[in-house]
Length: 179
Image (cartoon, rainbow, N blue to C red; front, side, top):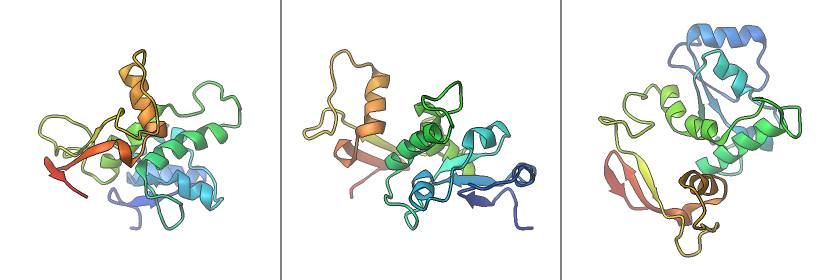
């Protein structure tokens, strides 16, 4: 069988209803690569629809077809693509994704796609400590932080405007990694 619970299918921009049902039936997963899909002018993966069918989705970067290996770029383009392809500007209802959803696909969603949701994807006790330590006020930061900014507001600024200058530490499986 080509599709199994271990299958990861990329892009999924031209799915027929029967193919969506097959993905669901086989418990195959999807790597959504929004930047690549846009750069190659190939289409849009209807992740809201696929997610509503119970299909597991994670964000990917697909550098061979995209223009950036950055997961931050994938989060941003995931949001922008969902707005653009919603068919309604400004978007109405729940046609487009929220920041929290795109972040989920980049983290815990991705861990489900690779079958490691019990080991990574969030900070639950017993999981690997894979984390970035972010300093939103580092010298040269691409965004400003103001006293009135909420924690979520700062988080949103980092996801939408931040870059490697804001990343001050990287941990993989509890060990600090120096690049």
